[in-house]
Amino acid sequence: MLQLLKTHKKTVAIVCAAVLICSFLAAICVTRQIKADEQEPVPPGRIYDAGKLGDNIIVHDSAEGEIVIGADSTEPTAEPAPLVIRTISDPDAIWSTDTYAGNHTPVEKAQMKNGSIGVLTIPKLKLSVNVYESPDNMEAMSKGVAHFPSTSAFDSNVGLSAHNINLDGSDGYFKYLHTLEKGDGISYQTALGERSYLVESVTTIAASDWSPLGYIDDNRLTMITCISGQADKRLCVTAIEHAGE
Image (cartoon, rainbow, N blue to C red; front, side, top):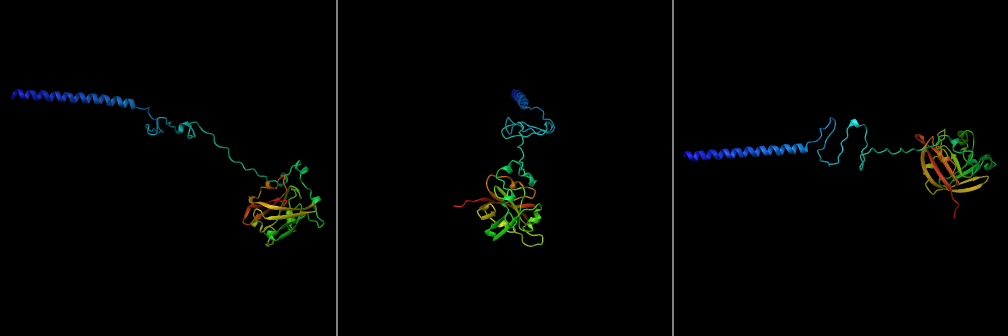
């Protein structure tokens, strides 16, 4: 009996020793793994992803300044140049001294016997009205359609304007100008002859933008009027000469 008890104690001692040895070896392995996985300390303000997003992730913080990170590059990318829309706010600046020598027609050559410089006819609007030029456009529009003095009187770009609503509240000559559509016919007659035009565009422009009245190689009419309720906008209708079939 005594011999059996001694054998049992010896067995327990051996088992305990084995457990201690295994625990010690396990502790060594865990310590090595932790050291292998140990990363550089993360400074305050940075976030480290622990490799979850990939091995090539670069982490930036506010200390580095403003950084633009592209899809395929970590280098800062240049911002695209802003879109610049240029307009001409001075109607007298749309024609230079050079362009007057080209297709520009002086008013004197187009002037008719009744004192007007032409007759504008728009069949769709049932409109036929004389065109006048005066240093004061408001004065010219009180008699009919006004011609912009800075534009040609017949060749190239002829600039015309009229009220949509007259100062006394009555209908202006261009009240229904907005109803014109691409392809509608227009005619314009001066002392130099008569031309037919087809509407090319009906657009809204800024009240200070006179660029549609600039020099152009083709023959066209550019008609401008106010837009009710939009003091900073203008309606612009462009019609290009149509020679017919």
